[in-house]
Length: 76
Image (cartoon, rainbow, N blue to C red; front, side):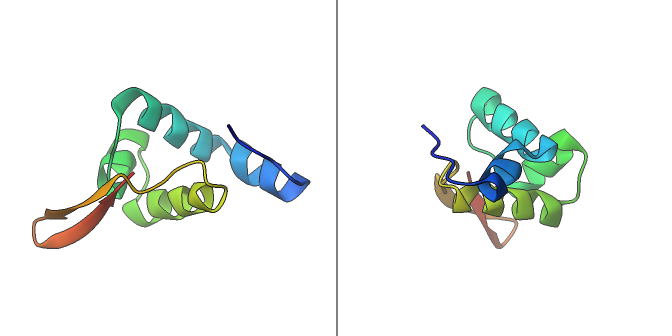
């Protein structure tokens, strides 16, 4: 359940890219920023930024971390 307390939080939550991210995570399950960026045709830093904003609203959380090609990645 999402608790929206003001217009700024609503704007953050309803951002089109963030809604696409939530949809993909709901359908595909946990994904990394790279996986999200490939699926949604954006760069990984952009995907990570949008996920971070969703984490601020406590809508998304880190499922686990994984070592991928020598880099520790968060999986949401």
